Image (cartoon, rainbow, N blue to C red; front, side, top):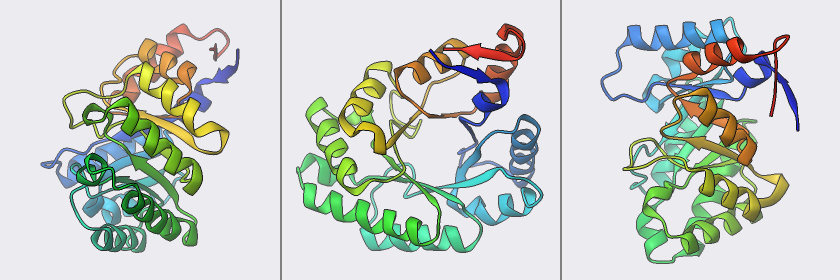
Length: 233
């Protein structure tokens, strides 16, 4: 069992607003909330990177740009360009969606190339890389194959979901992904994580980052639960 401070738990949350109709004021609010709760990152659509960089200039909150989001159906060249552009305008973390068409074709060489190119750009720029699998559409065999590619390429994180598919993160998927990639690649769980109990269980299953738009409610609940400001999982 591990004991965490509330701030350590907050640092596992990517505070999320990926709505296509999010306004500039919504982005400002998201950033102010992230600073107030000391979340690790704001998870945003790529085009909002410069705006959030401006709003977060006086903080250590990371700016996480979603690439080829939410479908993943753009070419490697487009994803690489989008990644580079996001970094140029302020992103400090990248969450990109894999090409599911190529997964269904079992074109593992393509998917490895895609991952290698995007992870390389992130490494060159000292930016965290996260690979979104979108598990709702994958078989267990496909999840395992992608984990094996990730184990070889070593992005910083692999991620369960965009939050836009019919289902999001499951405890079983987080356990499977962690078992398959081992210690060098971390797991981000996202999609449908809305309460403190689910949050805690995702961490217990092996997740080290949680994407959620309910981060404030989760942390508020954990503060009420905490003994001497700490939670043991």
